[in-house]
Length: 403
Image 1 (cartoon, helix red, strand yellow):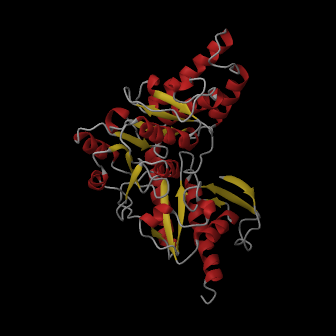
Image 2 (cartoon, helix red, strand yellow):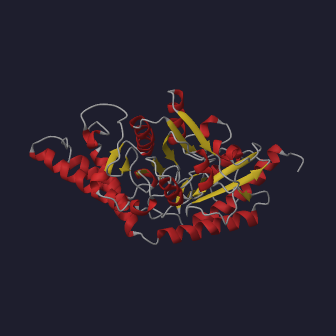
């Protein structure tokens, strides 16, 4: 296990740690640790492929070949054609391009999104509503999933775009994207289906030939690649309007000189993920073990959604009724455990998660997200469970001093 020096955020930790705490990094849904091979590939690309891939000289051609290789590698993750892939500045931009680009390219001005969507999709949809589009949000059931029937009920004759994520980034629930796609196609209208697959790529199989989507967004730093690079798969024959103008790179959909080192790192990370084909089963075992330990050792803890709900392998969402999540997180960090309250992009607002509100969970219930990766170990899982039990006990004394 990784180690770090003890930080005096909370009262001294129980004896036995000798001032050095084993670190359990369980915030992989926010960002994963880049693989050594990725770091080396990024550094090598910066040294060797510093020329602009659009330049016509030999150095530019060499950079263009490196970019083409990365595009092939990322396309392989989705069983897609390289020509269908558009590199972006991250998952947020890929989602915005897929949703906003499709909406602006359509004649009809009504869009449907699930209430579970990541802020990248949800806020983009809200911005379109401010610009004159009509917007319907589909609420999930108590199990954290939207249904095909609920999506179809929101679709109108003037609907142009439907957006439903594959894996929710906070609670880990799997959405029935393929079923929704078949139902939407059966309507016989040209509705663009956009899918945020950022939390799925690298651990769950994604095949564009079977998902039925028209655009799919993925991101490198969720699968042990570099930050600042993502990709959008766009079905052949589908039209998007670019978010902004420029030099016409990436099929005239995402102008600007490509971040070649990050794209190369993305390609290496994807290749490693594909080689680790059995990683998902390993991660599921660790997640189930973590949940079992938590619910056995931490009396107030309960699952945010039923454990039998179809979920991604790597996310465990835990509720602590009556306890605030933030001090528990600080107590965990003091014990060398890194987790989160929910989506990393929204935890600084100090408001209850929009997703938890959609599920009808009381604001008084603190929610913790433990998210694993292919690099997570059994030692980290067991340490995290012990640390959570200690942390909850500390916080309960603070908020319930009579106990």
